[in-house]
Amino acid sequence: MKKAFKAAVLGLALLVGTAHAIELADAKSQGWLGEQRDGYLGLVRSDAPPEVRQLLDQVNRQRTAQFEQIATRNGISVNDAAAVFAREALQRTQPGNYIQGQGGWVKK
Image (cartoon, rainbow, N blue to C red):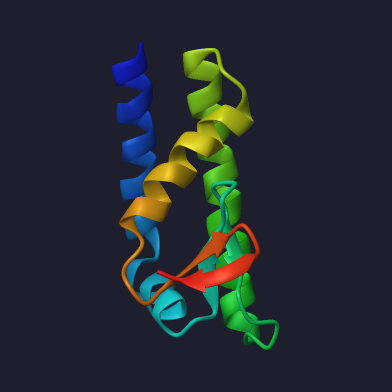
């Protein structure tokens, strides 16, 4: 079950990462968006343009749906599914992009 769960989370990472690959990568590299510790994207800069905010909302809605499916399939909480994804996403974050640290946003 643990392997199936991890495979599902990695599948989510690939799905979410490719759904908006160019736009998401650009938004991250420009410092608008970053990976939060809870498995969701966060707004790094409050002056982000509307299209970046829209992308943030869209990706987070997709992640929520995937976390719910993974949680149901594996008999775990949505928060647990999100936490596993968060660890993976933080590790995959490109150098120079932002991640959420204990005290706020930091460049990886």
